[in-house]
Image: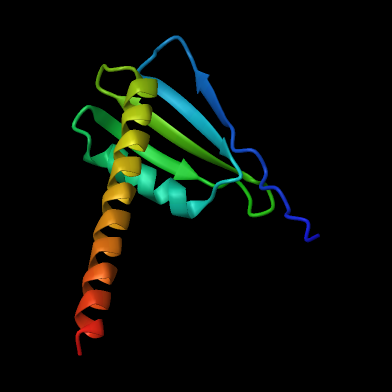
Length: 110
C-alpha cells in the first residue's frame, strides 16, 4: 500500500495585550499565499487601521499577521476576514466549475 504523508496540523496562536483592538495571530505551516490574501481582505475593512503579515524566516513554518482596529476586537476582524476569504474562494471554485462544464457541453456538440 502507498503510504500517504499527513499534512502538518494547521494551528493559530493569538497574542493580545490589554487592548483587544490589537493582536498578532501566528499561523503555523502557512506562507505568503495565505498571508497576503488575509492582509488584503483585512485592509478592505474600514474598521481595520493596520493589517500586515510577516514570515520571520523561510526555514520556520510560521507566519505572523498583525491587526489593529479602530475599536472592534482584532480577533473579530481577523475571523471575519478569514470567513470572507473562504466565501470568496468558494465563489471562485463554483464559477470555474460552471465555466468548465459550459465549455465541455459546447465542445461536445461540435
